[in-house]
Length: 156
Image 1: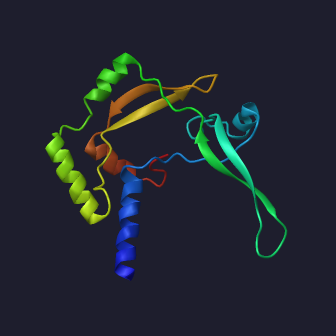
Image 2: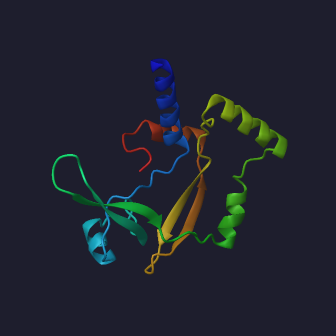
Image 3: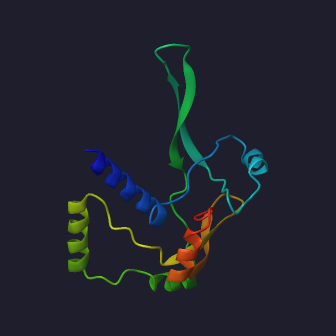
């Protein structure tokens, strides 16, 4: 049982390192200017409009606690300029439907998707009305990725 838990934890860690988003909420507020003042580093923090669901938690001991769940950003689209869309097309996987189906069945059998290193890096910009767009797409060379992984701030 411990071996299976360890294997699952290692699989999730590999997915986090290679395939999953590293974006997560750090704060919420009613005034985006206050949030931007609190988090001025635009290379690390993005301010987006989102939905939160407030709720009251009643612990077994102690008074009720007001908390909230993030329901997600309101923005459900990212603008991709036509010239960058063509460049991004070069990074799409080149596998047939049969190859895709076979890979998905194998991943389902193993319990986790096979981690794949990123092939490209995008730069996301956010405008004054909090509408995001892709500003750049660049290839990631395998040696660049292995060098980046050795840094403590990898993925930021």
